Length: 408
Image 1 (spheres, rainbow, N blue to C red):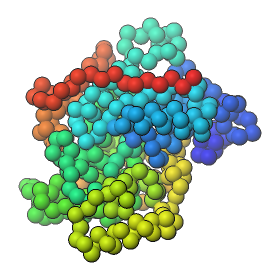
Image 2: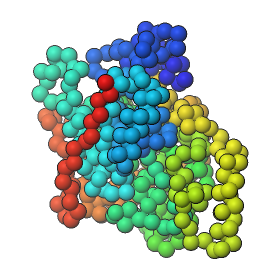
Image 3: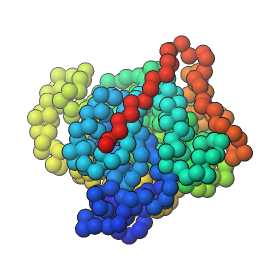
Protein backbone atom coordinates (compact mmCIF):
# COMPACT_ATOMS: atom_id res chain seq x y z
CA UNK A 1 0.00 0.00 0.00
CA UNK A 2 2.86 2.40 0.76
CA UNK A 3 4.39 1.67 -2.64
CA UNK A 4 1.06 2.26 -4.37
CA UNK A 5 0.53 5.59 -2.60
CA UNK A 6 4.04 6.83 -3.37
CA UNK A 7 3.70 5.81 -7.01
CA UNK A 8 0.30 7.44 -7.45
CA UNK A 9 1.52 10.68 -5.87
CA UNK A 10 4.75 10.66 -7.91
CA UNK A 11 6.81 10.65 -4.70
CA UNK A 12 9.10 7.68 -5.33
CA UNK A 13 12.84 8.07 -4.71
CA UNK A 14 15.09 8.69 -7.71
CA UNK A 15 16.51 5.15 -7.64
CA UNK A 16 13.09 3.51 -8.00
CA UNK A 17 11.41 2.48 -11.25
CA UNK A 18 7.97 3.44 -12.47
CA UNK A 19 5.26 1.99 -14.65
CA UNK A 20 2.23 3.39 -16.28
CA UNK A 21 -0.48 2.93 -13.72
CA UNK A 22 -3.19 0.38 -14.08
CA UNK A 23 -6.12 -0.18 -11.76
CA UNK A 24 -4.04 -1.54 -8.90
CA UNK A 25 -1.99 1.66 -8.71
CA UNK A 26 1.31 -0.15 -9.09
CA UNK A 27 1.69 -0.78 -12.80
CA UNK A 28 1.06 -3.12 -15.66
CA UNK A 29 2.22 -6.55 -14.53
CA UNK A 30 2.76 -5.35 -10.97
CA UNK A 31 6.37 -4.21 -11.31
CA UNK A 32 7.26 -0.55 -11.73
CA UNK A 33 8.86 0.51 -15.02
CA UNK A 34 12.16 2.33 -15.08
CA UNK A 35 12.33 6.07 -14.97
CA UNK A 36 16.13 6.17 -15.13
CA UNK A 37 18.91 4.10 -16.70
CA UNK A 38 20.61 2.48 -13.72
CA UNK A 39 18.60 0.12 -11.59
CA UNK A 40 18.64 0.95 -7.89
CA UNK A 41 20.33 -1.46 -5.49
CA UNK A 42 19.26 -2.19 -1.93
CA UNK A 43 20.94 -4.26 0.80
CA UNK A 44 18.58 -5.67 3.43
CA UNK A 45 19.73 -7.61 6.49
CA UNK A 46 17.41 -10.17 8.03
CA UNK A 47 15.40 -10.30 4.82
CA UNK A 48 14.35 -13.93 5.00
CA UNK A 49 11.41 -13.57 7.40
CA UNK A 50 9.04 -11.13 9.08
CA UNK A 51 9.12 -7.48 8.09
CA UNK A 52 12.44 -8.07 6.34
CA UNK A 53 10.81 -10.44 3.84
CA UNK A 54 7.99 -7.98 3.16
CA UNK A 55 10.57 -5.23 2.70
CA UNK A 56 12.53 -7.32 0.18
CA UNK A 57 9.35 -8.11 -1.74
CA UNK A 58 8.27 -4.47 -1.91
CA UNK A 59 11.67 -3.10 -2.93
CA UNK A 60 11.76 -5.68 -5.74
CA UNK A 61 8.30 -4.57 -6.83
CA UNK A 62 9.66 -1.02 -6.88
CA UNK A 63 12.14 -2.20 -9.49
CA UNK A 64 15.23 -2.42 -7.30
CA UNK A 65 17.81 -5.17 -7.24
CA UNK A 66 17.90 -6.49 -3.71
CA UNK A 67 20.79 -8.17 -1.90
CA UNK A 68 19.09 -10.17 0.81
CA UNK A 69 21.46 -10.81 3.73
CA UNK A 70 20.56 -13.69 6.01
CA UNK A 71 22.29 -15.93 8.52
CA UNK A 72 20.45 -18.97 7.19
CA UNK A 73 20.94 -19.07 3.42
CA UNK A 74 18.68 -22.08 2.94
CA UNK A 75 15.80 -20.36 4.73
CA UNK A 76 16.34 -17.29 2.56
CA UNK A 77 16.32 -19.40 -0.61
CA UNK A 78 13.10 -21.07 0.46
CA UNK A 79 11.45 -17.74 1.21
CA UNK A 80 12.43 -16.30 -2.16
CA UNK A 81 11.60 -19.35 -4.23
CA UNK A 82 8.30 -20.16 -2.53
CA UNK A 83 6.76 -17.43 -0.43
CA UNK A 84 7.64 -14.35 -2.46
CA UNK A 85 6.80 -15.88 -5.81
CA UNK A 86 3.45 -17.10 -4.50
CA UNK A 87 2.58 -13.68 -3.13
CA UNK A 88 4.10 -11.59 -5.93
CA UNK A 89 4.62 -13.48 -9.19
CA UNK A 90 5.87 -10.27 -10.81
CA UNK A 91 9.05 -10.47 -8.72
CA UNK A 92 10.15 -13.27 -11.05
CA UNK A 93 11.19 -10.50 -13.42
CA UNK A 94 13.68 -9.16 -10.87
CA UNK A 95 16.95 -10.47 -9.46
CA UNK A 96 17.22 -11.10 -5.74
CA UNK A 97 20.69 -12.07 -4.61
CA UNK A 98 21.20 -13.88 -1.31
CA UNK A 99 24.29 -13.20 0.77
CA UNK A 100 25.18 -15.13 3.92
CA UNK A 101 25.61 -12.77 6.87
CA UNK A 102 25.95 -13.56 10.56
CA UNK A 103 25.93 -10.30 12.53
CA UNK A 104 27.26 -12.12 15.57
CA UNK A 105 30.60 -12.73 13.84
CA UNK A 106 32.86 -9.94 12.57
CA UNK A 107 34.50 -12.37 10.13
CA UNK A 108 31.13 -13.01 8.50
CA UNK A 109 30.37 -9.29 8.37
CA UNK A 110 33.74 -8.58 6.74
CA UNK A 111 33.26 -11.32 4.15
CA UNK A 112 29.68 -10.30 3.41
CA UNK A 113 30.77 -6.68 2.89
CA UNK A 114 33.51 -7.81 0.51
CA UNK A 115 31.02 -9.86 -1.52
CA UNK A 116 28.43 -7.07 -1.59
CA UNK A 117 31.04 -4.60 -2.83
CA UNK A 118 31.99 -6.99 -5.61
CA UNK A 119 28.35 -7.60 -6.54
CA UNK A 120 27.54 -3.90 -6.71
CA UNK A 121 30.70 -2.58 -8.35
CA UNK A 122 30.58 -5.25 -11.05
CA UNK A 123 26.92 -4.61 -11.78
CA UNK A 124 26.85 -2.57 -14.99
CA UNK A 125 24.18 -4.40 -16.98
CA UNK A 126 21.87 -1.41 -16.92
CA UNK A 127 24.39 1.41 -17.31
CA UNK A 128 24.43 3.48 -20.47
CA UNK A 129 27.42 3.61 -22.84
CA UNK A 130 29.06 6.56 -21.10
CA UNK A 131 28.89 4.83 -17.76
CA UNK A 132 30.28 1.61 -19.23
CA UNK A 133 33.33 3.50 -20.43
CA UNK A 134 34.10 4.75 -16.92
CA UNK A 135 37.19 3.10 -15.43
CA UNK A 136 35.66 2.66 -12.01
CA UNK A 137 32.23 1.45 -10.96
CA UNK A 138 31.73 2.66 -7.43
CA UNK A 139 29.28 3.89 -4.83
CA UNK A 140 26.41 1.89 -6.29
CA UNK A 141 24.40 1.00 -3.17
CA UNK A 142 21.31 3.17 -2.94
CA UNK A 143 19.74 1.80 0.24
CA UNK A 144 21.15 -0.11 3.21
CA UNK A 145 18.51 -1.39 5.62
CA UNK A 146 19.81 -2.64 8.96
CA UNK A 147 16.79 -4.76 9.80
CA UNK A 148 18.17 -7.96 11.38
CA UNK A 149 18.23 -8.33 15.15
CA UNK A 150 17.65 -10.50 18.18
CA UNK A 151 15.16 -9.99 20.99
CA UNK A 152 15.98 -10.53 24.65
CA UNK A 153 17.50 -14.04 24.96
CA UNK A 154 16.56 -15.34 28.40
CA UNK A 155 20.18 -16.19 29.23
CA UNK A 156 23.32 -14.18 28.58
CA UNK A 157 24.99 -15.16 25.32
CA UNK A 158 27.96 -13.86 23.37
CA UNK A 159 29.02 -13.18 19.81
CA UNK A 160 32.02 -14.87 18.21
CA UNK A 161 34.13 -11.96 19.45
CA UNK A 162 32.81 -12.26 23.06
CA UNK A 163 30.45 -9.28 22.94
CA UNK A 164 27.08 -9.59 24.68
CA UNK A 165 24.81 -11.01 21.97
CA UNK A 166 21.94 -8.51 21.94
CA UNK A 167 24.21 -5.45 21.83
CA UNK A 168 26.55 -7.17 19.40
CA UNK A 169 23.94 -8.27 16.85
CA UNK A 170 21.57 -5.30 17.16
CA UNK A 171 24.15 -2.53 17.19
CA UNK A 172 27.85 -3.41 16.82
CA UNK A 173 27.35 -5.70 13.81
CA UNK A 174 25.23 -3.19 11.86
CA UNK A 175 27.68 -0.41 12.77
CA UNK A 176 30.54 -2.43 11.29
CA UNK A 177 28.60 -3.42 8.16
CA UNK A 178 27.54 0.18 7.55
CA UNK A 179 31.08 1.49 7.94
CA UNK A 180 32.40 -1.06 5.45
CA UNK A 181 29.71 -0.32 2.85
CA UNK A 182 29.47 3.44 3.29
CA UNK A 183 32.29 4.27 0.81
CA UNK A 184 30.23 2.43 -1.82
CA UNK A 185 26.95 4.28 -1.30
CA UNK A 186 25.47 6.03 -4.32
CA UNK A 187 24.74 9.73 -4.36
CA UNK A 188 21.46 10.28 -2.55
CA UNK A 189 21.83 6.97 -0.71
CA UNK A 190 20.12 6.06 2.55
CA UNK A 191 20.94 4.06 5.65
CA UNK A 192 17.81 2.89 7.47
CA UNK A 193 18.07 1.44 10.97
CA UNK A 194 15.16 -0.53 12.40
CA UNK A 195 15.00 0.50 16.07
CA UNK A 196 12.04 0.31 18.46
CA UNK A 197 9.96 2.34 20.85
CA UNK A 198 11.57 0.08 23.46
CA UNK A 199 14.45 2.57 23.43
CA UNK A 200 12.37 4.57 25.90
CA UNK A 201 12.96 1.83 28.49
CA UNK A 202 16.75 1.95 28.13
CA UNK A 203 18.92 2.24 31.22
CA UNK A 204 20.11 5.65 32.34
CA UNK A 205 23.68 6.96 32.18
CA UNK A 206 25.82 6.08 35.18
CA UNK A 207 28.31 8.34 36.93
CA UNK A 208 30.22 5.22 37.97
CA UNK A 209 31.23 4.36 34.39
CA UNK A 210 34.96 4.28 33.77
CA UNK A 211 35.38 7.62 32.04
CA UNK A 212 37.33 10.78 32.58
CA UNK A 213 34.19 12.77 31.80
CA UNK A 214 32.34 14.27 34.74
CA UNK A 215 29.05 13.74 32.91
CA UNK A 216 27.32 10.37 33.54
CA UNK A 217 27.61 8.06 30.55
CA UNK A 218 25.86 4.94 29.32
CA UNK A 219 27.37 1.59 30.24
CA UNK A 220 27.14 -0.38 27.00
CA UNK A 221 28.81 -3.60 28.19
CA UNK A 222 28.44 -5.16 31.64
CA UNK A 223 30.64 -8.03 32.75
CA UNK A 224 28.30 -9.71 35.21
CA UNK A 225 24.84 -8.16 35.38
CA UNK A 226 22.38 -9.29 32.68
CA UNK A 227 18.76 -8.24 32.26
CA UNK A 228 17.40 -9.30 28.89
CA UNK A 229 14.90 -6.49 28.37
CA UNK A 230 17.34 -3.84 29.52
CA UNK A 231 19.94 -5.11 27.05
CA UNK A 232 17.36 -5.09 24.25
CA UNK A 233 16.15 -1.57 25.07
CA UNK A 234 19.73 -0.32 25.28
CA UNK A 235 20.50 -1.82 21.86
CA UNK A 236 17.47 -0.10 20.34
CA UNK A 237 18.58 3.19 21.88
CA UNK A 238 21.96 2.55 20.27
CA UNK A 239 20.28 2.16 16.86
CA UNK A 240 18.81 5.66 17.11
CA UNK A 241 22.00 7.22 18.47
CA UNK A 242 23.97 5.57 15.67
CA UNK A 243 21.64 6.92 12.99
CA UNK A 244 21.85 10.44 14.37
CA UNK A 245 25.62 10.41 14.78
CA UNK A 246 26.10 8.97 11.29
CA UNK A 247 23.99 11.79 9.87
CA UNK A 248 26.14 14.34 11.68
CA UNK A 249 29.34 12.80 10.36
CA UNK A 250 27.98 12.64 6.81
CA UNK A 251 27.18 16.33 6.98
CA UNK A 252 30.64 17.11 8.33
CA UNK A 253 32.18 15.09 5.49
CA UNK A 254 30.27 17.17 2.95
CA UNK A 255 27.96 14.30 1.95
CA UNK A 256 24.73 16.18 2.50
CA UNK A 257 23.09 13.88 -0.05
CA UNK A 258 23.30 10.86 2.30
CA UNK A 259 20.43 10.30 4.74
CA UNK A 260 20.58 8.19 7.89
CA UNK A 261 17.34 7.51 9.76
CA UNK A 262 15.92 5.15 12.37
CA UNK A 263 12.40 3.90 12.90
CA UNK A 264 9.92 2.00 15.06
CA UNK A 265 8.15 -0.70 13.04
CA UNK A 266 5.50 -1.51 15.64
CA UNK A 267 5.08 -4.47 17.97
CA UNK A 268 4.78 -7.46 15.66
CA UNK A 269 4.64 -11.21 16.27
CA UNK A 270 7.56 -12.26 14.04
CA UNK A 271 10.51 -14.66 14.38
CA UNK A 272 12.26 -11.94 16.38
CA UNK A 273 10.42 -13.37 19.40
CA UNK A 274 11.96 -16.82 18.99
CA UNK A 275 14.51 -16.22 21.79
CA UNK A 276 12.17 -14.36 24.12
CA UNK A 277 10.58 -15.94 27.21
CA UNK A 278 7.22 -16.00 25.41
CA UNK A 279 8.54 -18.28 22.72
CA UNK A 280 7.71 -21.96 23.10
CA UNK A 281 11.22 -22.81 21.89
CA UNK A 282 12.94 -20.52 24.37
CA UNK A 283 14.94 -22.11 27.17
CA UNK A 284 15.21 -20.42 30.54
CA UNK A 285 16.93 -21.03 33.83
CA UNK A 286 14.20 -19.29 35.80
CA UNK A 287 12.93 -20.54 39.14
CA UNK A 288 10.11 -23.09 39.16
CA UNK A 289 7.53 -20.45 40.03
CA UNK A 290 8.53 -18.09 37.23
CA UNK A 291 8.87 -21.07 34.88
CA UNK A 292 5.27 -22.07 35.62
CA UNK A 293 4.20 -18.50 34.94
CA UNK A 294 5.97 -18.51 31.57
CA UNK A 295 4.32 -21.82 30.68
CA UNK A 296 0.94 -20.22 31.41
CA UNK A 297 1.83 -17.23 29.23
CA UNK A 298 2.75 -19.56 26.36
CA UNK A 299 -0.59 -21.35 26.66
CA UNK A 300 -2.45 -18.06 26.28
CA UNK A 301 -0.07 -16.82 23.56
CA UNK A 302 -2.88 -16.39 20.97
CA UNK A 303 -4.68 -14.03 23.35
CA UNK A 304 -1.42 -12.24 24.14
CA UNK A 305 -0.86 -11.79 20.41
CA UNK A 306 -4.24 -10.12 20.00
CA UNK A 307 -3.70 -7.72 22.89
CA UNK A 308 0.04 -7.09 22.73
CA UNK A 309 1.01 -7.05 19.05
CA UNK A 310 -0.36 -3.87 17.50
CA UNK A 311 0.43 -4.53 13.82
CA UNK A 312 0.47 -7.23 11.20
CA UNK A 313 3.79 -8.07 9.55
CA UNK A 314 2.83 -6.08 6.44
CA UNK A 315 1.88 -3.08 8.55
CA UNK A 316 5.11 -3.42 10.49
CA UNK A 317 7.14 -3.19 7.28
CA UNK A 318 5.30 -0.06 6.13
CA UNK A 319 7.57 2.51 7.81
CA UNK A 320 10.73 0.75 6.60
CA UNK A 321 9.35 0.69 3.06
CA UNK A 322 8.31 4.33 3.31
CA UNK A 323 11.76 5.45 4.46
CA UNK A 324 13.39 3.43 1.68
CA UNK A 325 11.17 4.48 -1.21
CA UNK A 326 9.81 7.94 -0.52
CA UNK A 327 11.31 10.80 -2.51
CA UNK A 328 13.02 12.33 0.52
CA UNK A 329 13.48 11.68 4.22
CA UNK A 330 14.57 13.91 7.07
CA UNK A 331 18.13 12.76 7.77
CA UNK A 332 18.84 11.97 11.41
CA UNK A 333 15.16 11.65 12.27
CA UNK A 334 13.24 8.83 13.92
CA UNK A 335 10.14 7.59 12.12
CA UNK A 336 6.98 5.90 13.36
CA UNK A 337 3.89 5.18 11.26
CA UNK A 338 5.55 6.69 8.18
CA UNK A 339 6.16 10.07 9.76
CA UNK A 340 8.80 11.77 11.88
CA UNK A 341 8.25 11.03 15.57
CA UNK A 342 9.69 12.13 18.89
CA UNK A 343 12.31 10.02 20.63
CA UNK A 344 13.24 9.88 24.29
CA UNK A 345 15.33 12.70 25.70
CA UNK A 346 18.35 10.41 26.02
CA UNK A 347 18.14 9.49 22.32
CA UNK A 348 18.62 13.16 21.48
CA UNK A 349 21.72 13.59 23.66
CA UNK A 350 24.69 14.66 21.52
CA UNK A 351 27.37 13.55 23.97
CA UNK A 352 25.80 10.12 24.36
CA UNK A 353 25.80 9.43 20.63
CA UNK A 354 29.38 10.67 20.27
CA UNK A 355 30.47 8.41 23.13
CA UNK A 356 28.64 5.41 21.62
CA UNK A 357 30.27 5.94 18.22
CA UNK A 358 33.77 6.15 19.72
CA UNK A 359 33.09 3.18 22.00
CA UNK A 360 31.89 1.02 19.09
CA UNK A 361 34.73 1.96 16.75
CA UNK A 362 37.26 1.17 19.47
CA UNK A 363 35.52 -2.12 20.33
CA UNK A 364 35.65 -3.35 16.72
CA UNK A 365 39.29 -2.41 16.33
CA UNK A 366 40.12 -3.86 19.75
CA UNK A 367 38.86 -7.23 18.45
CA UNK A 368 41.45 -7.06 15.65
CA UNK A 369 39.34 -5.77 12.76
CA UNK A 370 39.97 -2.83 10.46
CA UNK A 371 37.51 -0.10 9.52
CA UNK A 372 37.99 2.43 6.70
CA UNK A 373 39.96 5.45 7.89
CA UNK A 374 37.37 7.82 6.44
CA UNK A 375 33.63 7.49 5.96
CA UNK A 376 33.74 8.03 2.22
CA UNK A 377 36.24 7.50 -0.56
CA UNK A 378 37.60 10.64 -2.17
CA UNK A 379 35.91 11.51 -5.44
CA UNK A 380 39.24 11.74 -7.24
CA UNK A 381 40.32 8.25 -6.17
CA UNK A 382 40.49 5.42 -8.67
CA UNK A 383 39.37 1.93 -7.77
CA UNK A 384 38.08 1.69 -4.22
CA UNK A 385 39.99 -0.99 -2.39
CA UNK A 386 37.93 -3.67 -0.64
CA UNK A 387 38.67 -3.62 3.11
CA UNK A 388 40.30 -6.82 4.34
CA UNK A 389 40.24 -8.45 7.72
CA UNK A 390 43.18 -7.68 9.98
CA UNK A 391 45.87 -10.33 9.61
CA UNK A 392 45.75 -10.89 13.36
CA UNK A 393 42.48 -12.79 13.11
CA UNK A 394 42.90 -16.52 13.43
CA UNK A 395 39.49 -17.51 12.12
CA UNK A 396 39.36 -18.70 8.52
CA UNK A 397 37.88 -16.06 6.24
CA UNK A 398 37.95 -17.95 2.96
CA UNK A 399 35.76 -16.23 0.38
CA UNK A 400 32.30 -17.68 -0.02
CA UNK A 401 30.39 -16.81 -3.15
CA UNK A 402 27.07 -15.02 -2.78
CA UNK A 403 24.16 -17.19 -3.79
CA UNK A 404 22.42 -15.56 -6.75
CA UNK A 405 18.86 -16.49 -7.52
CA UNK A 406 17.57 -14.99 -10.79
CA UNK A 407 13.79 -14.94 -10.56
CA UNK A 408 12.79 -15.37 -14.17
